[in-house]
Image (cartoon, rainbow, N blue to C red; front, side, top):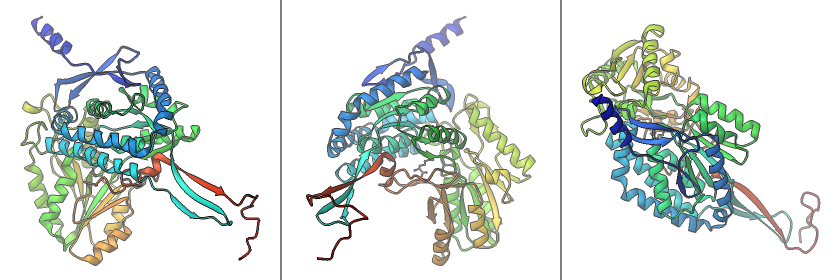
Amino acid sequence: MAKAKEAKRTRSSVKSFHNYIGGEWVKSSSGESFDNVNPADTTDVIGRFPKSVPEDVDRAVAAAAAAATRWRRTPAPKRAELLFNLAEIIRDNKDQYTREMTREMGKVLKEAGGDVQEAIDCTYYTAGEGRRLHGFTTPAEMPNKFAMCVRQPVGLCGLITPFNFPMAIPSWKLIPALVCGNTVVIKSGEDVPLSTINLVKAAEKAGIPAGVVNVINGHGADVGAALVEHEDVRLISFTGSTATGAKIAEQCARDNKIVSLEMGGKNAIIIMDDADLDNAVEGSLWGAFGTSGQRCTASSRLIVHKKVYKKFVQKLVEKVKALRVGNGLDEKTEVGPVINQRAMDKILSYIEIGQKEDKATLACGGNALTKGEYKNGYFIEPTVFSDVKPGMRVEQEEIFGPVTSVVPFSTLDEAIDIVNGVKYGLSSAIYTQDVNKAFYAMQELYTGICYVNSATIGAEVHLPFGGTKGTGNGHREAGTQVLDIFSEWKSLYIDYSGKLQKAQIDQVEVP
Ligand code: UN1
């Protein structure tokens, strides 16, 4: 009895959060809520968030539509000024946002700090575009005629974000959408709603007008789908699973919406026989187990030259076994939990597939950690499969957890074929001291990102981010390339000849 009361008291002392619609913090129309829990310790409830329903989406879209004209007409340098304010607010609150992110997402404090830093970098960098947003002028083919090209906003954008980069990825979408003059509705990842709320509270404080940014909390099936289907939404920008991305793409094709997708990866590092092996082991460890392998860019395959294969596996396994798994809030932790039970089940099922179906060698790890300090969290031992062959399921399919596969090879061409032989094409890497091999690999690896002498993770915000093949649908986020998602080109022709001139028909005389 006493225990039940205690539990009730703790529950009711949990802080409630709201949706953000038209500049107001409001409850969901269903009145229902869901708990945001710490994946390292599910008894730690971070907050209660609105379990939104399609009516909430309707309201948010209406608010974004009402704010559109005013925001579009605000000069881009002025819009950018507010975004510079936003960057400063995020920077000033970095420590708080970092701790809260670790608590709701699980990644270790250093990495959560990197995530917030990526949002700061993205915001400063992209706000700078407010004074560029370059178009171009070009000669017209008729005399006394002027031609130029400018960017215009696409309109109302629906942004659907994942759990693994709780502040960086929302910022990759939100900031360019705003600098280009669009209004937005964000559907945040249901496992990490607080980081989006932190970002949007900062945007409110920075002076972004009511209705320009709206946030809906809740689950994909309830509200993500309603946002994708809403007739007033012009663009959907999605980062998440391949299965959900494919459904979104289908719906957007039916409704003729612009859609930008960033989905899975099965990224690989090639380790040549001339590589600095210790550096390659360090890189592999970081690329495979950073963020518990829950990055689209994670190094989930290590393609190792036969001459150094044995030594590499031995060195790697030694380091992997020494990794300290635990609560990300503990400064000593190197690998945090995975995000939730569903993720845990999926990862463990792949570990089983690796052993039973693929018959790869389990070089280390392979178990769920369920006792003592791990008992209330979603922890998995960092796991390495060796003797993996191209085509095995653990080599082909995205696992999105602390699992990597080591594949031996003999020639660089064979290694490149292995890297390219998956349905994804996000990131790749090669460790070599030979400049010819490095350039040849850079040319032949068919991925959106490629590293030399570094792991597959750690993209910087001022370069385009995205992948080939099943990773996306040809768009790139970050860099200036993201502007091509959130703006459309308008070609302008000004005829000052005072008469009708017919392009392609009138023959222009050389004077
Ligand atoms: C992702 O996993 O979807 O390049 C984003 C990196 C990070 C971003 C990853 N800067 O690893």
